Length: 188
Image 1 (cartoon, rainbow, N blue to C red):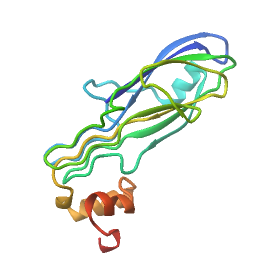
Image 2 (cartoon, rainbow, N blue to C red):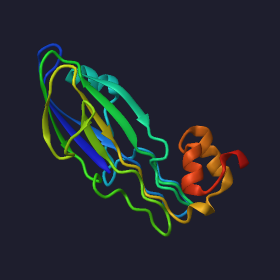
Image 3 (spheres, helix red, strand yellow):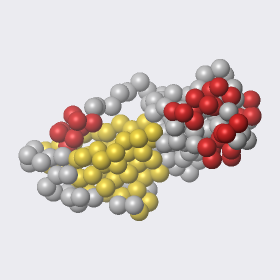
Image 4 (spheres, rainbow, N blue to C red):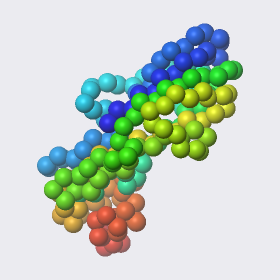
């Protein structure tokens, strides 16, 4: 569930840059445990803080947010994916190479659990191959939608207290509760 974005070019100060941005999706649910949000697997890599990355590369992380309803529904919910918007804020072009999977086949759920949301990559709002090399002009925006993990077990068996917490924290939307769990949020 790891997405690698290699960035090469020159930063705002004109220094050469070649670095990898690690973006991760949600981890699948296990029996008795909801999946962790935005957790790299099968490795234990950690990403650089956004501020360090921005200063190093000449890019701006315009947004980085969890995606509601991206984790597969289940008795135990899959971990949430995320949306990351990266803007070339340098003075020249940057070459980005993407290496992402789970774009054609979303992470599967198990024992009745729903699939997580699939990964997607776009530049300036136009979908691009998740395994491609692109040149970002100054001001261009690379957006990655990181996959959600698959759910475990029948969503109708999800503990109502957990579903109420999911709604309160924004992990599941009211429409998601109705569609995926068959529950009217007003009844919780």
